[in-house]
Image (cartoon, rainbow, N blue to C red):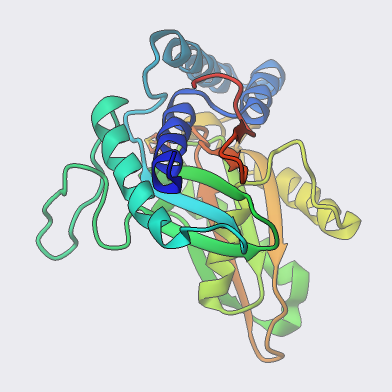
Length: 294
Ligand code: SF4
């Protein structure tokens, strides 16, 4: 089979998996939050979320009506042939998934306000490319919810305030976001680079499973500290109060200019959808995040 068709089929399956089945680490984190939540209202909200997840799997329906804006991450081996055909394959997969899964059409022209009806349009689905050595292709899809997108921010911190300034920025951002991003959330936090680089890294950090702390022990410690701090806000599940506002914090960074301290916070909602697969040179496919749904 041609690479274009293989990629289209795999991307279609990934979209279907992602919107119906939450990744196991997110499901387990929500279950743990339910067991440990002390607020009665918070517990009721988490129970509703867990029931929702179960029903979506049973009826093969999306876990949320907001099936998000479609973002792909592509790790392309430099020896893979036909890379120029991938974009078209991903657009076709998105159109097909919109019709067949189905996904709610969420791509709107900002000038005319017209919905394209198939989740595609200028720069959508958005493609993030990374060229790596080898001859395989790793595809990841993140259907990114609108509510959680609306509160993502990039800020310019005071370099002299360092990490304390970052902590303050994150806590203030979470308080300001309140119930809007459909908590409990996952936070992708990034610092350095530039404003564009920070938000890109923050969003990419949302792909790291909740079971994998940062490999750098100092950053892993900071992730834990920020998690504890934001959960002291009491915003709670769906903003109705409780100790589970955030399920996990993933931090990324780039080096920064001495005079600049860009930082970004990307929110994912409880419907933290992502799915990945690897396409090998011989055309075989390994689904990396999900066992079900293909
Ligand atoms: S932010 Fe997430 S949970 Fe909330 S409506 Fe959108 S996709 Fe659904």
